[in-house]
Image (cartoon, rainbow, N blue to C red; front, side):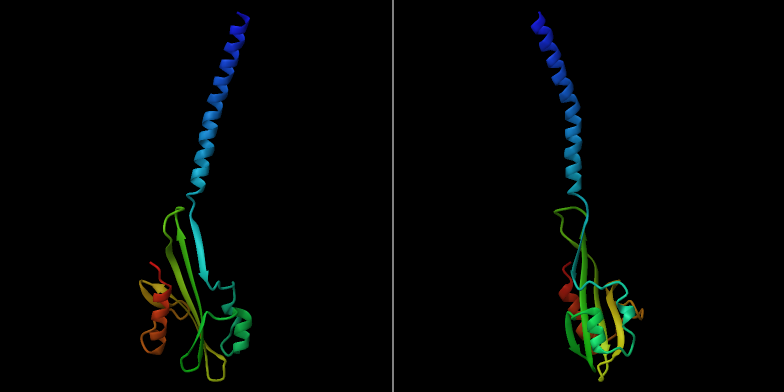
Length: 158
């Protein structure tokens, strides 16, 4: 009889342990599963340092721009030289889902014939159109637009 009481206690203890571990294990698995579902952000291309554009006044030299901004993504010649710094930010709300582009930027720094900054533009897309977030205008046509449009098509992966 003594053995049956001990077995009964051990059986009760095992059942109590199983009842306690079951919910804890389930909660741990749920937490691990949800951690895989957090959103992720991705930055591709040029990362603009905070305050960098404020350090480049109109009239600054190309060398000053290179020191502050670094090497441009691409260079063009439109009535002088233009440095383009291209970036794209995307995110995916849940792991294993495709990325969605949330922001695309092309920072353009225009130089005159003397290689001094003539104008700075921060182009992005607003309402599906290329928009300069510094001057708050949309480029209309000409050489500038014919160069920017393919750049945005190239970095658009929607």
